[in-house]
Length: 75
Image (cartoon, rainbow, N blue to C red; front, side, top):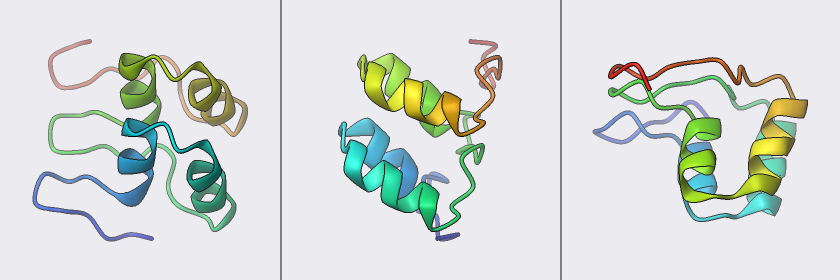
């Protein structure tokens, strides 16, 4: 669950990028860090919001992801 790729992306970020709510739920239930950020400061909630996956954004917010986080560019 703690593995990241060369850009700092973890499995939750990839699931959020692709809109896989069931996988997001699975990973969160297994204890993945929902506030983990990649090397540019993006977390899974930010990625889901940018892609328009409202169901994932809502779920991650309800599970405690900080909706006020900013990436390294201040977005």
